[in-house]
Length: 52
Image (cartoon, rainbow, N blue to C red; front, side, top):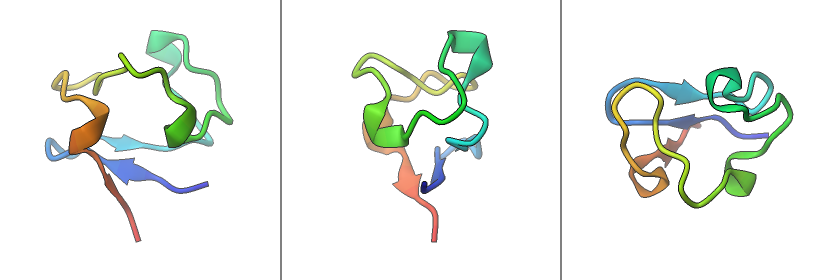
């Protein structure tokens, strides 16, 4: 699964998920809820870019 980076520098890693926001490990970025936002800066998913 791909990692995605927010402009603030936060990296969403699907192998880790987002435990602080009840997103379990193994959750692909595409499967995050539509209202999920960056836990560091509250940016919406549209601002994240896929990491190469």
